Length: 197
Image 1 (cartoon, rainbow, N blue to C red):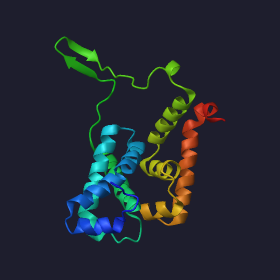
Image 2 (cartoon, helix red, strand yellow):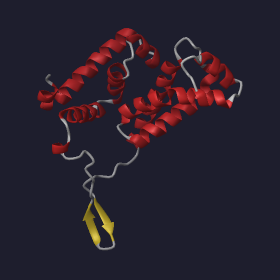
Image 3 (cartoon, helix red, strand yellow):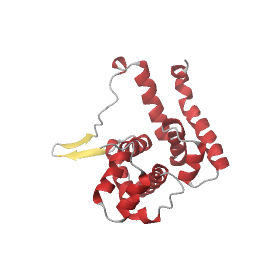
């Protein structure tokens, strides 16, 4: 399947007319980028998959209202960002169980065990360590700042594309991105020596 020559607007028209293969082509074309964006926001494979699927469902249901003043990918990223922010709102409403709470078993109560999936520091290269610390810091940012960092620095979106995707003026995008960078720098301050080249 060669997507280099396919035109999104043709695929969108076919989708609107009920052509299932055109929808499959659109999903196939943008699925990997959408998933990577979602994973950078959530740092969780399952959540990223769920958000990506939800974004494509929402996009499909709203395809008739897509004005085509922006690229399909920009519109899809806006939907994905909204899915992520909606997810975070729902998550805040849920009760969170403490990691320090005890678990009841047949033998009595025991301390909750949490597997450390980061691997031993001796096995990690310096590059992997920097990536891990950076990802952890990005996840600690407030959702809106996280979106700004990921869109600009990870997905190489321009200010204009970000403004379209987030429906914000370019000046607002620039100032929010600067605040997000400062917040990220502050989070990385304790390990700044690892980021010096």
